[in-house]
Image (tube, rainbow, N blue to C red; front, side, top):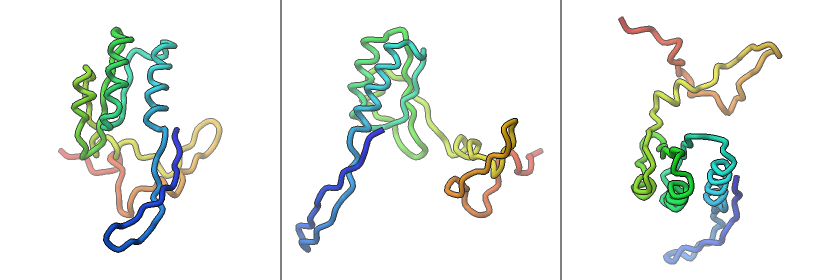
Length: 138
């Protein structure tokens, strides 16, 4: 996890000043975690969900240091893969809208510990129907 800092920005045209949130450290923390987990042999295949070309250095080091492990670059819907990451030998996969729809949590889930209620913030748009509840095509 990284954090945000607010940087002063100014418009050269109208001289307006505002504070822009800027993400810090997430990319380096991701890189360190990937390499550390590989070093501790916690996985054989890692999926890197980013199209940030800054992670190409991570992919290059990963390929060099862990030739027996596999790295797959995963791109979110509507985004392209970083060619720099793929150029370091990473395989590629796409997250589709269908993948996201199938991963939506039901409003309520009951298990041996009791009832789990989906947080309001996780609810899909009004009128959305989960794929498992849609009429099946013949």
